[in-house]
Length: 362
Image 1: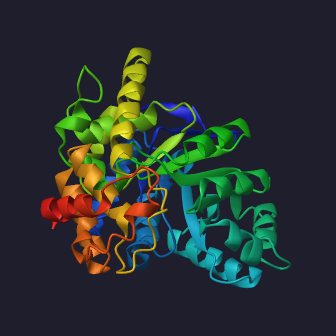
Image 2 (image 1 turned 135 degrees about the horizontal axis):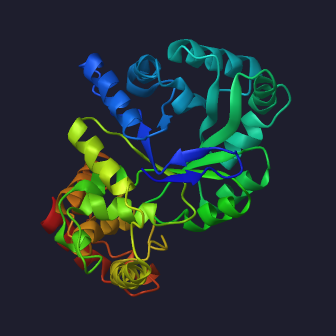
C-alpha cells in the first residue's frame, strides 16, 4: 500500500480509503471481516456517515475497529439539517456512540454548498462554533467538509480557513473539481475524493476506457483508479467495496508505486483532450438551448449519449437515460418544435441528435 501526507494534518493516509456506503449489511459478520481484511492489507482511512446504510454503517465500522483503532483513521459526517450548534452536537454524540469511539479523526460538514455554509453553518451559535468547541474538547481531531456545489464555491470554502481536509467528487468523466483540488493542496488541505470510478459508471467493461493508455490495463475500473491515484494533489480515493475480490483488486492497484508513468500521463492527457473535443462536437453543456418547452433536459441527454459514443459505456449511458425518462426529461419527449436550435452557439442539429439518443438508448 502507498501512503501520502494528508495535507498539513500531520497524518499519512493510505492511497485507497474504505468507503462505508456499500458494506454488505445482509451479512454483518462478513462486512466486519471485510473491513478488517482491508485494514490488514494497509488501508488506514475509513469513511462513513451518520445515515449510511440506514444507520448501520457506523455500527459495523465501530465493531470492525476493535483491535485496529490505533492503526486506522476514521472519517464520518454530520448532516447540516439546521443552524443549531446544539443539534449538530447531538448528532456528533450519536455518531460517537454508534462507532463506540472517544473521538473522530476527520469530522465532516456533510454535502455542503456555499449557501448552506453562509446561512446554516458559520452563524452565531451554529455548527461551526460547535465544531471548534468539540475539537478543543478532543471529540474530533480535524474539521472537514464534503462538497456538492460549483467549482467556484469550492474555492470560497477553502478560503474560509476553517477546514483541514475536504472530500469531493473526481474521476475520469468528471474533472470539474480538478483546479479546486490543486488549490486545496496548495493551501495545505488534505484531499480525499469520492467516486473514483464514477459511482460505478467506469467499472463497466469498456475497451475504449482500457485503451486510454497504450500499455493497457486489466479493466476500465483499473484505468479509472490509476488516473485518480496519479494525481499528486489527491491524497486518498474512497472505494465502497462489498466483497473480498473487489477489495484485493483495488489494494493491488493502490500498491503500484507509480500508477502512471510520465509518458503514460502525457499520452492519457492527449487522448482525454481529444475525447473532450469529440464530446464538445455533440454538446458543450452551455445550456443556451434551455429551457425546453416540453421539459427535455437537452444537455443531460447528450451527456448520456457521450458515455456511449465517446467512451463506449453503453450500460452507463442507458442507466443515465432511464433516469431522465423517469423524470420525464428524456429525448423521446421531444416534440420537434425546433425552438432550441436557433439558441445553440455551435449550430448543433439538436432535434436530429435527440432522435439519435432516443434510438440508441431508449
